[in-house]
Length: 226
Image (cartoon, rainbow, N blue to C red; front, side, top):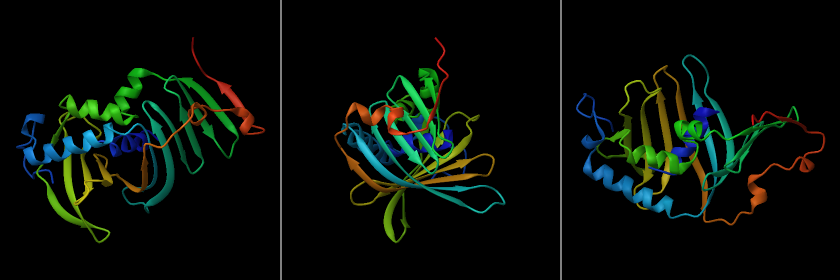
């Protein structure tokens, strides 16, 4: 789930890393790639909210690929995520983790440090990018699903990062995000494809809170620590 949230965070932010070690710091980012990323950052930060449908493909070494579909609503640091048997809601202060089939929901306080570290929210990734934690390689033009896209690959500056690169695919005409792929050092790959994105959708507070009365028979475990 942490890997999914990381990918979702990056979908609202910003592909070829050079094949040598010349890209080592954020200052080494390709100017053209950096300009495209800045334009995309401004575009997404201009949205008051977003709702997105997505497809997540998980590839593990020597295993068949696993494909999952989900939806997410996001406004500021609040979000409502549904995928398969998991339903996660956060109002920015509390987090409800709902295991649908087992009718169990656990309540926790949101840990600001953990949120920042894992980049749950789009704004958090943008802060990471601005803080110089990634270097952007030159733009490559390619095709995905028969559509012309720009690839920009981001390399974490931290050599101890779990991931050694991220590949962002942007629509070549509109600069809209098409997909993002994360390459893990253990050989696993995670590809998040945006199937539909609706910006500036109006939400109410109810979208970002869990009401047990809406789920008859659900067992609530309050794990908050005062």
